[in-house]
Length: 276
View 1 (cartoon, one colour):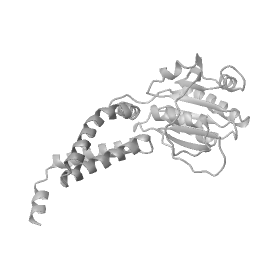
View 2 (tube, helix red, strand yellow):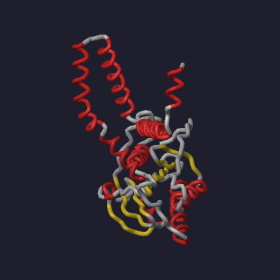
View 3 (cartoon, helix red, strand yellow):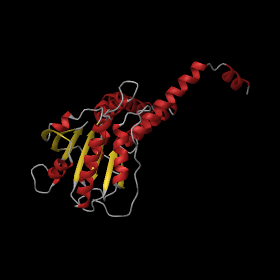
């Protein structure tokens, strides 16, 4: 009992700060790995570490030697296996306010016009049940994605967006990339999400939106071709069945500078209705 009292009396402020920083870092790592393939790999590593320690305690020298060798080689293999997750983690750090400036800033009439045109286009596509995928670029550049499509570099307008997604037109199949108030490209190919726990109801368009939101800080707007439902993907999560009023507020919040610089987070809504 006395030893525990001695430990607590000798704890300094810097020790508490050290523990808090480690706890926060571990939590952030857990959030980044959750519901990705890296989560299962991380569990496997923990099991190997436990088995290595157990074999050492039980003096199983041969097994311990094999496990130690596997862990040594595995450290190098992890850099290759976890490459997408490591990239995602570094991008997450780079997007934090500590390292970057504020989000996109479009003010006054320009802000209102861009949001109005976007909402009008999405509403029209939704009514006509025309599938669409619009990606709003933020801090993380999407030039690699832009290169996969057809460059437009035109001002955001509802007429242009609607015409792009009209079925059987040259640019309808793929995503539109928007930066600030400009349509950068159309018919772009997006990476699909690696999340295997998603509902089977979600089609390729929704999986592509989730995939690009996992790899960047973008905001993706999806219109279902089957039901006309409006959805939004951001930070690897999706919010479905939005109305135009909610969409408008989300876009205004995204464009408008915020003192907290927090991205608009969306929670997965479980719904029994059939979605594309």
